[in-house]
Image (cartoon, rainbow over all chains, first blue to last red; front, side, top):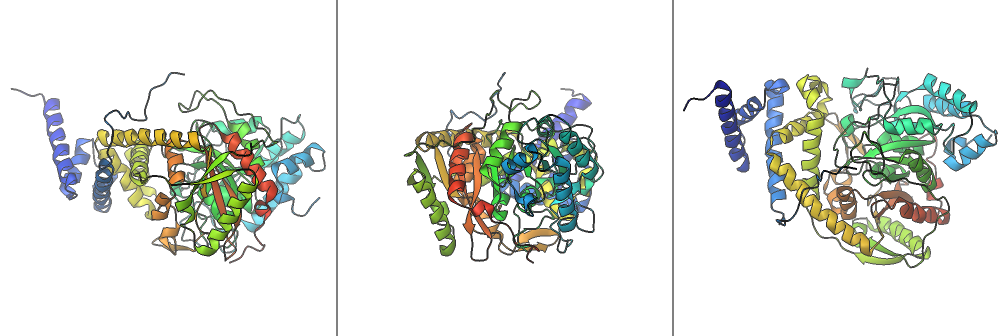
Length: 88
Length: 483
């Protein structure tokens, strides 16, 4: 199978995010994972700075804990998100 | 002219203007001079909150002197358009104001002068009101991080994030103000300083032209010295706006004469009252007595434990992350105050998480909304302390203003234990905070009444009846403002 450069980039990016997400589930996030996630979504911007990157790494860990806590809620399978599209 | 006219209610001021005992220019000059004397520090705002403003309250970031006097002159020479005509007001500095800088509480936008008005400002202009001040707020509406000090005691927190709006109203710097609330930012500061503040139903007031923390949670609402003030302002700013998807095609016509049927069931969130210290609890119990005398059938209720904190965190993180995306992209966000960096990083973290987590939070929210509607179908009003204590001492640690006891600040665990407050914000329900007494140190305490969606008049009715029976809302901070 041959992949175009665009398809190859998308595949690698998706894998990086998936791997990073797995790490986050364990509540351990490495700086490398954070860098891969940023690269996958387009660039590092101000997080190219190591101080900001560390803040982001820590924030991702905290966010993972918050999400894990929320996921413990016994949600009904029928529950729709509060994002109903309404035409007035 | 009375000496304390700056503390008059909207109805009183309106009467003075209507009978030409006072002109809008005179009133505006009175407020401007008072602000320049008591509020404006000797450095430019917004500033790092660790900077001391000395004896000045710093509730106003930008004083629009020339624009205000021009608008006042116009008001004096045109036909009166209603009770707000000619009255000087202030808006939280996250609302766009044409020709007057709008900073969002950040030095990044210290020179930002919009060429449009927020919908609320348009409506107030149409009502003949006089825009006079852009009120202090923490950077990007970040809790209690503004420079505004508490007029009752300058070393105390004003809570946040509509700190300047609430404190400036109570200090007699403006006739009324506009604040915003995502998770507590109108009613909490009102409680800290003894203002009356109304959080409207989500969708009652257009947010067009306002900075966004969360499209699905943000509300704009009035802050005044009385419940009647809030009703008069709400009437002027409510209504559908095609530029804000959340607004509904519902008008709000304020009825000034309260009508509250005796025997109405009012739920008392007992666990929230028990968060108060014994001496303060007595103050809150007295407030319940006033409600009982007004004909409320009080019943203790308890609300289930729900993941309020994680829901707010998810929704605000993801939505703020999206709104602020351009400022991440152009790098400007890096110029935020140092204390705010961890929060900015949390928005980026939310942008990197799976979308399904955001949707999960919105699905849990749907269940909580159903629970809230069911509760309100049994109790048309629920009451709880707005905050169970007076304002805690404000200290600045690492550039971040924190109360001496972090639990006594929205964001600590006390916040998540005020369940009806959290339910109301998650479900978009209106609430009003009204002063109900003072703690042992002379700092204001308040109760919050919460009602069903679109039932602001019910809240205002009961709040007006309460304020006819009490005078807590007429109490004024001693001048000079205590250290």
